[in-house]
Every structure is written in structure tokens, then in C-alpha cells.
Length: 309
Image 1 (cartoon, rainbow, N blue to C red):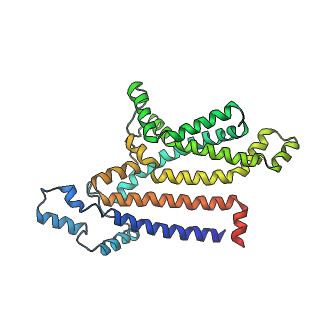
Image 2: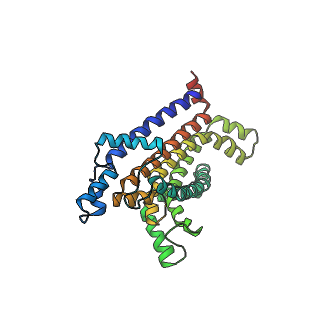
Image 3: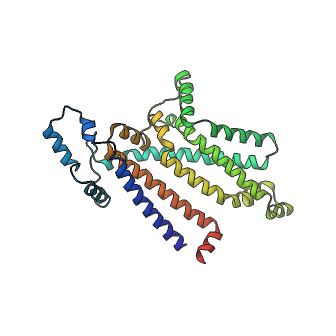
């Protein structure tokens, strides 16, 4: 297990370093942000002062070293637009994004796994076919189309739900539904396939032959063995949601989270905020992937034995 942990930590550090370098380079390809933010009315003297203040007069390597130094001293610079510390701006957006992500994952687990089991156990009945049709619909409808449809239906026509912000529990309903729709569809299919693989195994037939109740055999023996596959899928999908899944949803519903911050920072070329926001998201994805690998190793004894050899 220690070997698995060390390998995961090494991959995490190397991946994070590559992402930091790429983010630093890409955010500087769009030109000088001083010219974009302040326009042509800026005097030459003031322009030079701002360039020196933001260290834009240094070489690219010096800027990169200064950027890396920010991870040790906690100084990530100031926002070009808000004139506030970048870390302070990003930290303010983390909690709303985590709240929305937690709501979407909770709904997904409560809906997708039971429906996936139903689709596997009753695969030859109408209930199984209905679940698979629902999964196909979740795959087929893009998230931005579903978001616009919900806004038009429940906010514009019916006037039941609020659209912007996260002030009340009602604000969570539409963003959570959109964010979890595709994840529910994917997890239902993977749960169904994983359950189909174990339902035909000998130990399942033996448990039924011993007279154990059907629900106990399905949940304890079937789901218990299929959970390894489901766990890996949940980890991958959760990383996908943290990486890019919330950007469209937060933009449509004006949700004050990391996704909306990244979009607005990219439009305004506020690259201190943009690069730190992207790095924060990348770090979250890397941590989620590492935890998924560790959980998979704990859940599957074969992996632990293979590493021990």
C-alpha cells in the first residue's frame, strides 16, 4: 500500500508541475494585459509604472520563477481588474462550487446506482428498458441545451424558480439538475454493465441456492463486487465535473463559483486570476484522481497483492 501511495504522490507532483508550466505559458499568449484592461488613454509613464509593478518587464524565465515562488510564499499577485489578491478572490469562489458539486454528486449517487441495479436485474422488462432510455436521453442532451430549457420553462414561463445566484435552496434545483444529468446517465450504464457481469457468476447462484433473499444477494454479493468498477467511474466523472463540468452551468445560472470566475477572467484577460483559478481546479482534479486510485487499491485486493510482489 505504501508503494501505491508513493507512486500516486509522484504522479501528482509531476502532473501538477506540467500543468503549472502550461498555464503560465498559455495565459501570456494573448498579449499585454495592460493595454487591454486600461486601453489607449493610459500615459506612457503610467503604463511603464504598471508594467514594472506587475513584473511584465522581466524576461519570461524571471516571470516563471517569480510565479513558482508564489507557491512557497503565498503571494500570487493582484487581480488586474479588482486590484485584490488573487488567492483571496479564488478562495471566495471555492465554497459555492463545492456546494454545487456536492449537491450534484449526492443526487447522482441516490438516483443512478438504484436505477442501474433495476436496469440490470429487470433487463428483460419494461422497467429496464425505461431506465436505459432515460440514460440515452441524458447522454443525448447537451448540458447548455438542458440549462436553457429549464430556465425558459421554470423561470421564464412558470416563474417558479430563481435563475441567478445561490441565495436559497431553490437556486440549487436547476443547476444541480443540469450538472448531474449527464453523470446520472453515465453512472446508470456503468452500474448496469457492472451488475450484469456479476449476476451470472457462480457465487451469485450459490447464494440464491442457499435460500438467501434476492435483495440481500443483489445488494451484498452483487453490488459489493460491482462496486470496484462503479468506484472508478465515480472518481473519473467527479474529476471531470471539477475540471470543466461546472463552467457552462455556473455561467448560465450566474453561479458565483470557480467556473464563472474562469470565464469572466478569460474574457477580461485578468490572467493572474485566470491562471491561479485554473491551477486550483487542476489541483482538485489531481487530488480526486489520486484518492480514486488509492480507494481502488483498497477496494481491490488483487491490486494490493500485485504491488506487494
